[in-house]
Length: 553
Image 1 (spheres, helix red, strand yellow):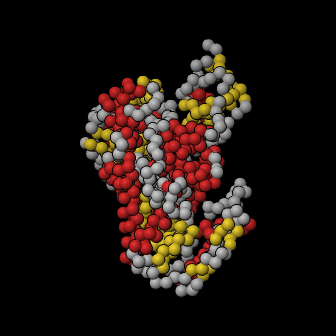
Image 2 (cartoon, helix red, strand yellow):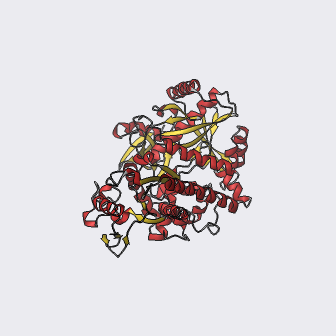
Image 3 (cartoon, helix red, strand yellow):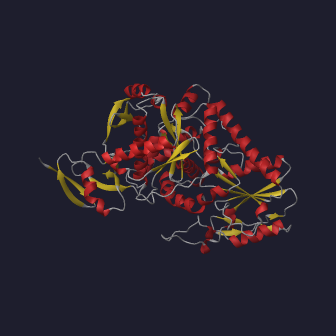
């Protein structure tokens, strides 16, 4: 038998002919911070069980990296649904839906005839442990699309059959775990032995699959319930069910049937009703002078604050929008991160003392000249924006630190009403392939940055990890302290964003580090039928990103 040569970290290595990249991963595992999940072969992601390519230059992708962690989660879900199939005797009426992520947990809801209780979870955990111990290989084969549709329809997976009805590609990759077959959007680990750390917890009508986080891939942290976030996500699910849309296939069918305009009106009406409910609670509480709105990047905070202001005005209030960004410290005083870059995400970038002094004066009936931050010069400016709060006046304050009491420490608790907003996507690709909320927000930001700032997709993608770290540190820890949670995601929006995002993503070159993420997003958008933004209402949150809003956003 001959040998095959590859290049790892600039050094040539030889392996027996026919070897897979798994052999190289095993040899180099002692050098990596976490388990190796994938390799980059000449700049392209490859699964570990793929045969080595002569002369290939490879890099290892670990579970402490985004692509590797996604691979771990995907494989754990496959192992879980396979174990359920084993327990239920291949009963296609007893299935589950992977709903959404809450911290390091993934909410799994039962479908049809499946009963979830502690006895079932104990049996499921035992079966999953057995599969892990057996190191069952995960295989992949390419199947003609029509054959895949028939295959999944026969297994009772109508959501997948519907998804592939709109597939342009002539083939589908089907993964097999023993006799169980399924489709997954993305790559898999070579076998079940990698899924060492997991736990199952009963929660609401289903259960939580708890997995390690990317930052701690070798440790399973305790899962913390977030009831307010869960409620918002469950409400979005209920809205989707009311509209007859659980998956991308359902959405595509609505578009094909010419029902998009009605869908847009219904979704926008539901969202407006929710904004009205929040406004009513603010008014009924009494004594509220500061509405604090916070949420992660591209949540639609600006449009929401304007629409909330309109609703408050309908109750006789006089709302005044204020952006916390106007209280940025002058650029020369802005703290820097460990890389020497300005850290605009941290609370220390805000002149907290000035903000509290101004707000307390307003609360006491004094007239205050509010600043405006000039992002070009990096300095605060005063342009005659004087404010005095009367009995009906209320400040609608938007900024990432709005839920952090350190931001407004001098203000009485009863004077504040805190709102957490995020684009909590509830739409699934299919029942086993969820859409991360971060993907929807990244597409929103990419489209808006290109339109407003002339930023490339490459630039937006390169900044995204830093933005996400800022959210983890400064926003998510405070989300459960909010008085209300608002979900800004719209079930149709990814079909609208598609036409704007695709040209931007195609502009990312193969030699740029962001290429792999751009390619992943392009593949993701292939599932959707694109639609025009022409029929969107002028006050829609989506308008904040695609343009044409009636608000100054």
